[in-house]
View (cartoon, rainbow, N blue to C red):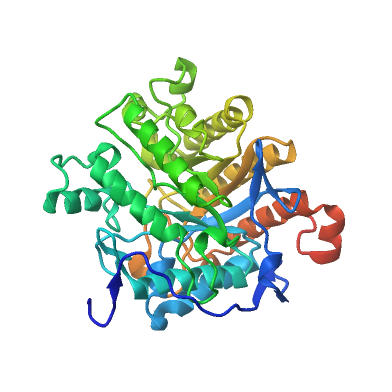
Length: 431
């Protein structure tokens, strides 16, 4: 027991079937039966939905499960989905993990907190009500919310591992086995609000194996590559419906050609144990992920230099998706810190527009650029969760407008001009 919460291994609770709602951007709720929501699939470099290419314009809000645990804070989950639907956003990336910290989903190896699991159930149900799909990340490379350091600590304390290196998460057999137990628990969880197992729920856009994996103790990338291949295959053995991605930032490793390694922000990033091309080319990986943080990566601080780098970085990865991987490329995180030198909100506007234009151009030309997810959106009253990159869209009208305009452009590519004229009623005109 933890307070009045029951801890248990790998159980779900059955419940009733509900009526759900979908939205088209800013145009109200439309009740439909659950089975009308389709799974997103892939055809080479395109995401596919109902036989048409599907383009992503979305965002990150890592905090959803945490705020859904207590009923007193669930309103913020509803608020962010409502706000996102007003901007026409289609996919939200969020954490489906919390290992051993406050409001932990996994309290100890193989033991789960039912109240927190019910919070994740709620997030999924609420997303579906608003016509939004979820990219669910399954563990953190970093210490925040437990991550791989927590797995290593648990295994060390219980005498299951003889290696205290954080990177033993990737190669220790016992830890790999426990992570597979975690994957199975998530994939086969039966949502207590809908009665649908996660692996059967099209509200989930895709699974992300890890947030920003790095294995610095093996710069060759072999250790991480083996882990990616094993874990993606394991997910696919349980879940035949959903797409899978890795969560890598996009750095080119030693196995990439020199011209690609030269695209890295510096030589350091070519030796963090990842390799974008090899990693993303694994058979169990359906699409490639890329992050974009030039203000973190580059020594130069001038925005114009950062924008020039973004153009090179993003287009290099889109080119990889088209010519080598034959898979979609999704920018799963991007942003600009408010602590950047001489920061002004107009700089963020300019950076966002640069990325949106690159993605839209690729999508318009049938390229591999499949969409982008801004880091990160918040709602009022979340000061303790705001980082240097987060913002409240209603307080930044220019960013609200940019996000909505991108949604309109991508929606027209998916649905066609006739649909836009009939459904959007002028919302996207002149965008």
